[in-house]
Length: 634
Image (tube, rainbow, N blue to C red; front, side):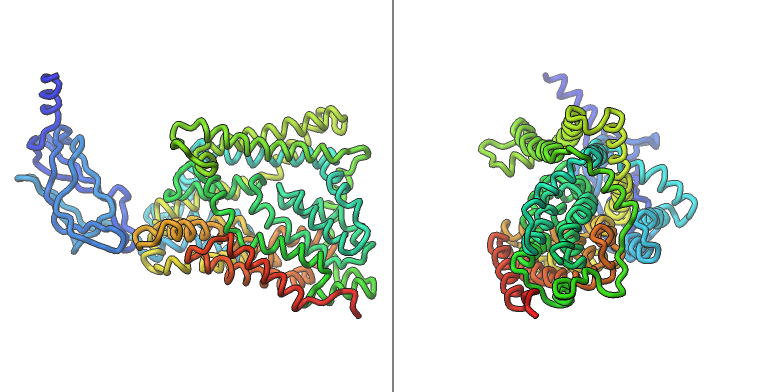
């Protein structure tokens, strides 16, 4: 044992010969006045790294940054193999020095990127989305602009690095590949159950009991809840299937479009299994502060704070149940009920013939609703059971852990893959056993469903790349925090408002989430780190901020006339698109106001959703019965 100690001492000595220190900034550039990361390497007499040096060195001209505090750094940590890393440091003046005995080294700033440039890539993406209304072009342009700043303002080099570095890096990890596979597989399952006619049969089962205007609207609402796994499938199936009998019941097309639109996206943002969940969890996974591999658990933790989605779904139910309306929707409903005019005179129903033919082709004689219900139920059950089994067997699970800790410890991406591919197998087996589809038709339907998710996958990859650029290279979140520094108590409601404005302008909740999450999530974690808040308030602010991004994106999407789901709702419901937006906006604004004032603002002070959600529901009830009027009244 003694000779091992002597050997280690020989390999690592505090007084090993060092003639020079080489100080470098691995990033190669600075961003604004943000803290630096420096690397100090001890060099021996031969000019090579002195790997046996493990002492410390004196530092002059450097400050250690901890939150808002900056204290002089006088000594480096212990060297390991001749190298030490100095994290979160800042220059006291214009240069710094490192010394040890006679050895000396120094560093002064190199290439500087103005701090404002760190926010330009996401702003540039928003601007292009406004001009071209194309999320793919906008997100890629944001990635390219970030690469332009990082790589010395060379446009062609930035283009090449965007293709060969930043985009491939986003899908190199196991979690990213799992998210893409899950999204594609779930799309394939939806393709099978749609082509077999099972989705239409499931909606038809619900529609059989609709014999009044109230029943018709509640049927449309319930159908939107049942088809929770995909917003596009929700719009297409519910609108086209429910429209014939809501027409007979003299429900205006604007009201049907509102019900379809206001159950599609809100339901998918709070459903624990949907075609959105992989995307949302994947965005959470891009944020270092949240921890890799825990995107799904963070989604579950943020779920109780999804105020806009909860209030919107309840508000649709309340409007249908009470048969009361206000604003432009009341005028549209009275026109349909009293005059039989389902569409405003002069209105132009936005009906896509291809969508109608697609829905008609998927309606098959003898199709059974179990063909859709069983695969969807299997995905839900597999996810719940899989999370529990995976979490329970995790070696990191503490003793006496509760259900939330078990789910947080689970390998959520593996579980989602089990669930999605298992759902595909069950959907295919049912369609083959019942002979709704041949084997070739089943495969073609699965592939068609996978193809329908290509756009979401491409947006996801570009969103990952832009998020990584902002987070790792340009330090966007750090710069915004150091520049704006809002009170952490107001962060949830501010995030909700900003997300809503971006989604309204771009018409895309997906791209809004991709732009805002890499900025808002680090801000929520860092602003609540060293301010003396209680753990309960910190948790409330952090997860309310994550939920505010999702809720604000959906709200802005609802009010935007260029939103894809808003357009599809008008198509499937055969409503004039401008009339749909005009009648839906007052309802969306009201629910957003309740979500902000009753939900996100109190959440900034740690008030539980168990209190604010019931309070918001009471506000909705008071508004509908106070402002609303019966449609049947003259």
